[in-house]
Image (cartoon, rainbow, N blue to C red; front, side, top):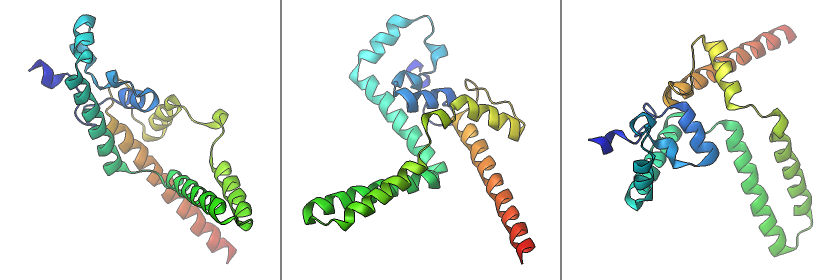
Length: 179
């Protein structure tokens, strides 16, 4: 029984702090229900030392991350960046195999576009900024250690959809005023 309750199995159980911790560090200890292991570091070390247990943690994380991707997907901006990276890589390969000089200019243009899409470190939002923004605009309390990953990303998705609707309405008004 103890082993069944020790690992987060899905994003409804996994707290957003733990999800964020996995993304940032890859530390599989984020997949534990810590309240079950508090004060028992010896048992935790023993469990982590077992390959079978480590594999269960990995499988649980992959399951949670795949669930996230199936439910929320990747944002369009990120997908466009991946698409540009692919184009650049393929053009570089073609450039080296064909000695084509015009491809070099195309690669430079695409690299500049990609660079323009990437946020400088100073402008990147922190996880805490995202929590505060969601609390402000959704009017709900979002605590990283008590809010599930599913709930957090649902709030974020809803907020994004509402922002897109507002932008679309503003475009319609601008187009109506221009005509």
